[in-house]
Image (cartoon, rainbow, N blue to C red; front, side, top):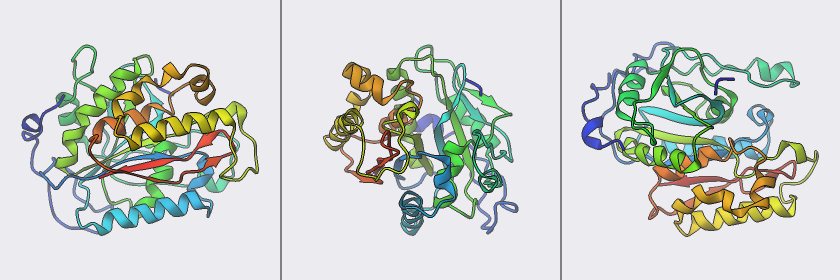
Length: 301
């Protein structure tokens, strides 16, 4: 595994090719982004990769959410996904025309490895965004990667939401070596993209401790520390205290139990940064998987 932009800057991006075609295979390549009504931003708790194919409440909720978003009448020109499963030195955007589907896990049934999500990439947009967005600490442009693709943090949730795979998708990597405040700051830069036709999706988990999982537990069953951490985060989001989310490590032992490593928490900071504190959040999938994985998900806008 590999480890503030302004609307004025984004306005220099080329125009979008707009020929309406029905399948990802025949869709013209996205060349740029048009102004649009502000699109929502999502944080999705993705949990086990098996949620991508099992007929469970988590997956059904993702299907419902995708249907709802498309029914709003403002179709995303692009989906930008920040997954817990792509960590790189510095920040990178996927820059290939046909991103591969990555099965970055082991020990699961063949049916899961057979899954493909053939959504197109958007190389021209990736290059434009990489030059417009800046690494928070040093102000350098982001990189463009030609190797990665869609890991399961992306395709396992996007496939139930948007099964036609006809909306171009970019992944944004995360530099795990950087402070949480920098991840939140980069999320703030993404805010302007919501008015350029971009649906922003952070994919991780508010609580994620694989060492403590217990099989066959109900969604309302969780460790006390898992419930405590999840509740603190929920309350900060409900109160619009989005800046406070970057200070999660100040919770001490509870934060360490909730995240022995915190790569699954970081996508929340991008989504929260792209949201506005005044936007009313809506929670869904508010239970736990295997007692130590919070599936809590949030829609802003």
